[in-house]
Length: 258
Image (cartoon, rainbow, N blue to C red; front, side, top):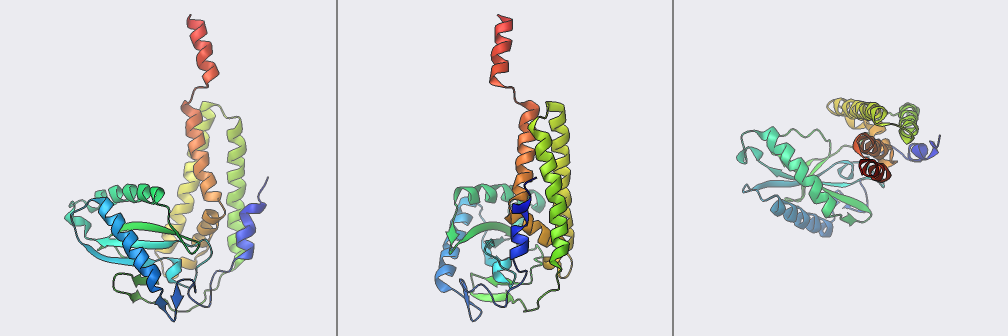
């Protein structure tokens, strides 16, 4: 099994830095040129959402507003709005916004100083658990991160990533010769594994210090080294095998019918 690529990032990375990313920050001040770019991108995103509600704030969060950034970190830009003004069913509006923002990010790939820009639509009443939160609109910290290096044993992260890597490789191998009924089983297994990883991460993030929980770090390693993408690809290929009909099989059926 070709698992070496899965662990390169775990072995070489650090979980914490002694400063905010210097590409964007100087003396805790965000680069004004980049700030203006992000504000314009956020405005374009907002206009394409076509909602008749005001922007409450535009915020930068995630690891690039904290000490746990890496070369893989995104510039996570959240456009804050009162989504209840769209519809009383805020959860329904959130789901619709998630679909729109995914499409928007896919169609508007922006990379600034080597980091992808990701736009989000967030309800003003949604509790944000990140320890670093910066208002791009007002140019000031909402929640300034404290330099407090966590205690993380890389071996704990490595072991979980390795275990998941083995499972993913086995699913890949099984899928190579899977028939439709077998593909259904593989799809179910891949879906369950993806859900397990995401659920464990979400539960730990909801707790104090969750950003540096083993589960969250495992998720980040799997996302950054391609394992999570592989899992999504397995699901897509399994679904295709369940229903697709080879072209040569179609010709054979047509010949038999004739």
